Length: 105
View 1: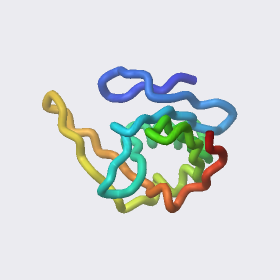
View 2: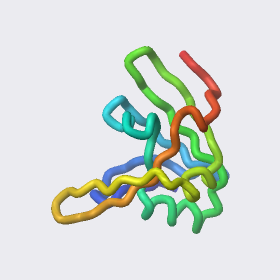
View 3: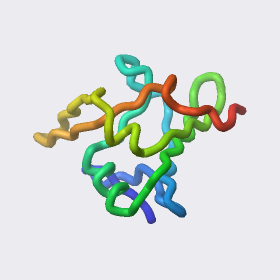
View 4: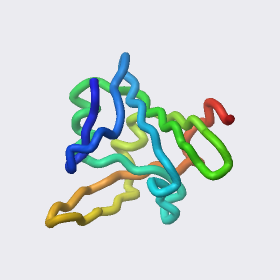
């Protein structure tokens, strides 16, 4: 199942209870040392019983595959509201320190 954000941009897939999303350095939030997921997308993940989030990070030093339970995002108190075109997009963040590194290339 393909997942789209509030701008109708493709942001990931749900496959067998796992949410897969590809990210680049522009998606890394330094303030929280991690990655965010929109609350609206988290609602969709919960509705589809997603239990794991995997982020394929294409960084300056190569590719790192991060993973954590979706519950960490649902329970996160690290939030930020992105404003674009009169739309407020609430995102919840998880630090990479709270994720597992599955693979580095």
